[in-house]
Length: 276
Image (tube, rainbow, N blue to C red; front, side, top):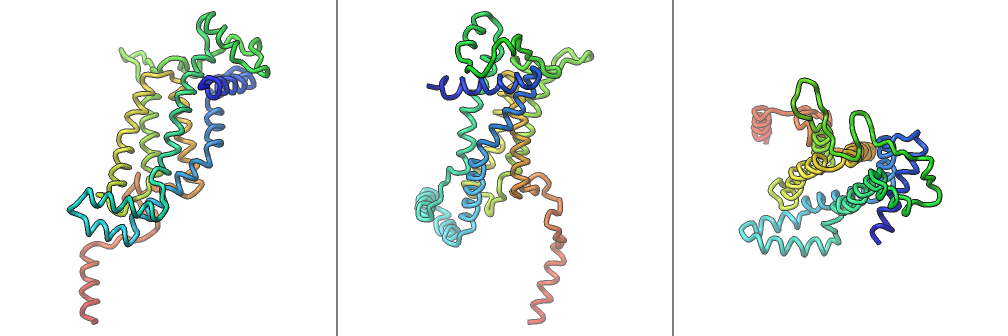
């Protein structure tokens, strides 16, 4: 069932795009990533709505009352918060759903890359068995798995003449773009000590390491997918006006407001008190 619903469609779509692009597998992966992002766009919108509802929950008066009332009883606080979430009909996992759906896509693409780039006659025979009728095997062979300096079927390393080791450029970029995307799409929490805010912070911290490790050890074609997917995701959020630039550049004046120094704030409050 997994091969029928995931591996075969992914492999055939990749090879179909590849056949129309003059046998450039790197560009085929980029266009395939764009196609996946377009298909999963409604899920991304659902993720945004879920994040907004969770942020509104943190500002809800009853939510703040619970935090104050049960600040010394963490278990009771979690129970009452769960009741409030259920009462307000908020799905706390709505913002995580697109991420969970991406994992089968990642695994499917990883397996499809190896099937689409056969290295032995046995691999080639297995490939011919899963091709659809609209993919002409004679038109795409031999499959060119080279893109820039990379072999897309192998982990990527950039070897320079003056270095005795290879630099994992794609793995670094994967980790960096994953971190930037996570920071940009995470709404600023009203209470940094809140459980939801702490979970989001941990996710933004550990996910780049996980994705970077996958980029370091798995096929470079998968790393290329990660990078393009992250960049497209950032652009999608930016076009929807949901990017939180303050998370990356906290000192930048996003809203055009002029910051007020603490001394001026105290002085103005004293003046207001004298007027009263």
